[in-house]
Image (cartoon, rainbow, N blue to C red):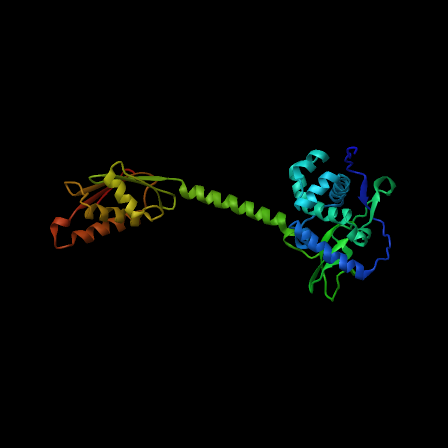
Length: 337
């Protein structure tokens, strides 16, 4: 058997309005069987109607389907396995594997219609012609005007219906009246998510950039604070005075900051937690003075006052041996309690 050569422009969907007298009852049966056959390939009408290919792409897909009909060995393999051999098809047609995969649902739909005689009437509904015999004038819709689509009802619906046009497009149209499978119906396309895909992608991209920017700003350290107990504890604050970093060079200090879960806490809450930890774990210096060194952006005085107020509340306790002092150097400005 001689090798089949692929031609990407042998056939095309005609834009001519060719009237065909086809039996509606036979069409209804063929459509029902066609839908079942699609499901064997894990394809359905909804997924087909959610895909949008222009006439040039559909013509290419049509020629691939005709090529596969003539490629008997490959066709048999596809039918038996119920899946396209995309890499083989890509190699034989010269398209990328990614492109074949993106067209795969339409290739399967056209292939089923063309290779199987059970769908003779359904295939005849399509306006297919040899390109050499076709007038190449292209019919275009008026800009800003909604195009009215006409095709066979493939799937009934109250508010929308999926049709197959003579130009090989599976499309969902708006409907207001009852319709039956196999009848020809006209209507304007119903807007679905795919029509807003570009907008959705743009919004998602902007959101991603904004989230990334906010995350970067949030994680960016602007203030470093060293708290001197028997173990040193270092914390970093972002521009919002939230703790984004904590570290201790000692094992005891590391255990303390791990238990305190300092990240994302406000400065004053984190500082008070550390001072409480120093008290409870006997980590206050021998002289009972906790030195705090702040470098970078100064910490707000109001927040510092909350820390010193906590120390003062501890020192009001009747048990004098619990007393301790705190000395804060706020980027060069010293504050004591």
